[in-house]
Length: 158
Ligand code: HEM
Ligand code: HEM
Image 1 (tube, protein in one colour):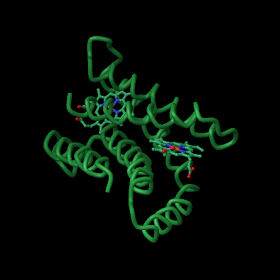
Image 2 (cartoon, protein in one colour):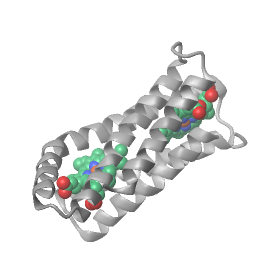
Image 3 (tube, protein in one colour):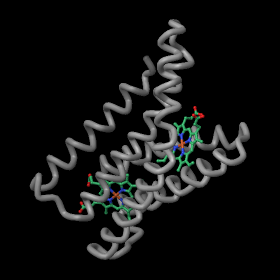
Image 4 (cartoon, protein in one colour):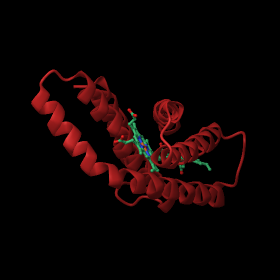
């Protein structure tokens, strides 16, 4: 099992904890609903990393083959969920700005915008590696995803 399963679980708990704790759950403001949808779909896509790591490390050949088969099945969904996450976050950002106005003094907003830029790069490298796979694109898609994970964690904790 990859340690990323545990880290992903931590982000899931942080998302749920924050949203249930900060707002009068279940009556959430619309901008928060879109933020949560985007964060959860990002997490779903990022779990691919945990599955890939497990495939690389697991000893049993049978488990390896079963996981690889499962992974191939969900890859078609992966590209669309990635785009849906971006759409949800663009709506989240626009709603936040129309509610509070844009301000560089709001650090949470600045980190959010950085995460939006990262997410856009993630979707771009995803489509590029689908049509023209190169080792560099693979690494950018992987390490930018990792950076995004921590950026989103910080954004939500702020
Ligand atoms: C990948 C990108 C993003 C993700 C996954 C994300 C996710 C979230 C989540 C789950 C929340 C609710 C949790 C909490 O308040 O602690 C939230 C709140 C917030 N986000 Fe984002 N966000 C992203 C991008 C952005 C962008 C681009 C902006 C700015 C335009 C932004 C500004 C904010 C603000 C100001 C709040 C607090 C709103 C409030 O308390 O009423 N976020 N975000
Ligand atoms: C939320 C956005 C996304 C995240 C977090 C994400 C994350 C990941 C991760 C962690 C992997 C495995 C990395 C590896 O070890 O090589 C991967 C693979 C891949 N991703 Fe994404 N991705 C996202 C969006 C997209 C999009 C929009 C596409 C568009 C086509 C895409 C295309 C691919 C492809 C083609 C692979 C290789 C799959 C395979 O060989 O089975 N990704 N992605």
